[in-house]
Image (tube, rainbow, N blue to C red; front, side, top):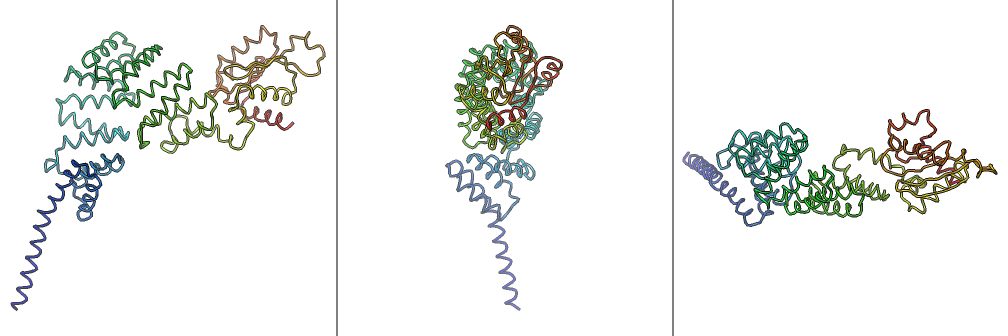
Length: 453
């Protein structure tokens, strides 16, 4: 009997020792993680946190520090999962301050472009910490990104009221006032932002946006160059800098900027990188480097299948791999292109060529029906043929211009070939007029006929 009592007591003592060790030693192991993070030993911190979570999956402090370690490793998606776990299970105040957590969680969500979740947390911060201007600024910033300018302006103004020296808030207010055509007020806010803090280079980003919208491209370019000194807006400023060159049709300079912007995002995780790739693809398309454009569209499609018109672009060019005639039409040099167009006229349409001229948008040819021995004296039979290889559908204005250009040539009819189609307005305008709009499918057939003859 005494042996049994002894065994029972020993078991109880062991259980108590185990419980004490679990209570006392385990927290010390949790507390070791932030020390490892401070020393830069993130892999050790991750390993320790995972060991603790294997024993206690609900240990929210281990989840929290694991999230912080992932942030340091630039593994944002994994960090969000850990912070989300903390958000759902933590008892704030017991070793973890809610304000600190919410600020960190909101910033991570915003970095990973989870705007709605970030917005919820920043809105909660305005309730928990209503005297901090930065909370209102971040709410306004998210609303601004979502194009909800009326709400954005209110929160930005609240931020500026709480902190009259909040340069970023004044800069954003200036941009939004500009968008609502309150030009004088907008300029005052931007000037105030720069005056308050000339070294807050993000203000120059907003100045650049205003100058760009006002068509002052040189001024915008200078402003965006200054804005690049701010790490937070550097990538966006480079993209905007490139877009100014793009507007000016300086595609080589624009492409250098977009490539720089893409290279800044080592993990290919920023939402802005999608825009850099999209604009880079547009430059490649304009420069008729279609294979490179397709590569960029495919990269975008992997991350966001509904991004702008990327799906449509991939669909539009999907036949290039099998259709050599159309690929040559879109990608060849100007000299080769003129030969392709002349060949299409001679063999595809069976016309006689009078003139051939390369244009910025493509190639213009005048011709007449073959077999007319007196063609030099029959000017009224001249046909105006235009081949376009622009990436955008041909608009109504271009059709109108073609009809106007027929008059000095005494042309009786015109043909407009387009690899990208025509707008609905252009099609309506062309009805019952001496101009025939020939879209991609028929163009392909003519190129094929000319190539096979």
